[in-house]
Image: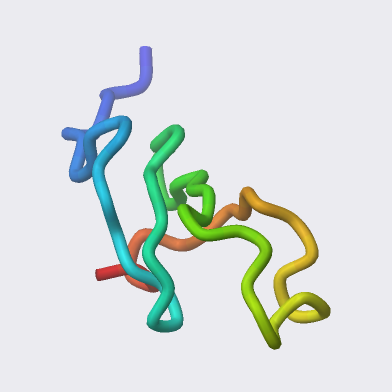
Length: 61
């Protein structure tokens, strides 16, 4: 059976990506699913058309 890695993020935790505040929805081995708190992002509608995105763990702070 595969060994489960320790969690780095908590569900509901606030993180920042590209200067935008997000909330963690789920955590996986190398990625997290997060949603923007203030959506839609004014001026970034084409760059971020959805309120939830998958990010590598090292992309968020």
